[in-house]
Image 1: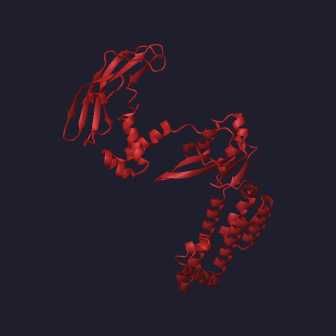
Image 2: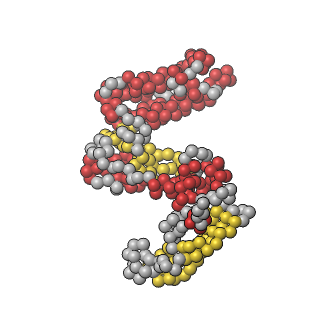
Image 3: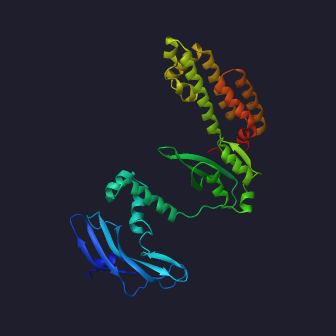
Length: 362
């Protein structure tokens, strides 16, 4: 039987294995510079004049039962005279600024796609935040660039990604669902950076953009693709209406006497959920609630009428006519939250009705 040298498992460009130490806490692989390989500039290929040397320890794949394996390797900083800058050269198998090999990061990212970050962190003796960073790095490196030709419909939305209201702006292909763009923040600049990547021909192919009622996004769309229809997303509109309905509910709770308060308390989801999603007990409670409170009954009926318009309208023209009538009815009720929502909807009625032309939602 032929036995291969264990050192062959650790091949890094420009380095050779000096010794391998197996300890109780893990395996340490010590490497030295390969004298046959001279550092060179990755841009122009010129030989680097050595400025200073150092050492770096990076994580590598587990070996047998040892989950902690790290490689100590020499790092050389040199100056490229043609480019006029200093370059710190690492082996190509090592991430340029993470203390890990690419193969270790890919193994972590593969497990992270099927397991919770806490499980993967325990498996490889690293932190959960490190698991997430590795996964993001690998996704950004390995995923192919999105196709930006022949785009017809874009879906634009912001998502909260961390505690403390950290947001990212996301752009999806409305036909395929492919992620096209993601940028920190929810201001104009976050969406402008997407359109900056498009050519004039690519912009001309866009027929519609679906957004919430974010004024910053609307301004960018009007500037970059003025020919495209703006669609106010149906989901966001219904969520805004439900928020107005809940304001009415809270107002009625404060106005009610003790018996009325007991009926109204805890009824938020009875009012905002679709009737078809309620069980029999919840339906009986809803009937009692709207029977005892006229203002809540009016608000609930208007909410259901709004949902019915989105379910039944056959064209943008029909929807615009029915939504206009709905807005007038909502304003006439004198319920301030519904009136505010209706007046805002009237200002952008074509954008709300555009849903019935393109039938897309984020």
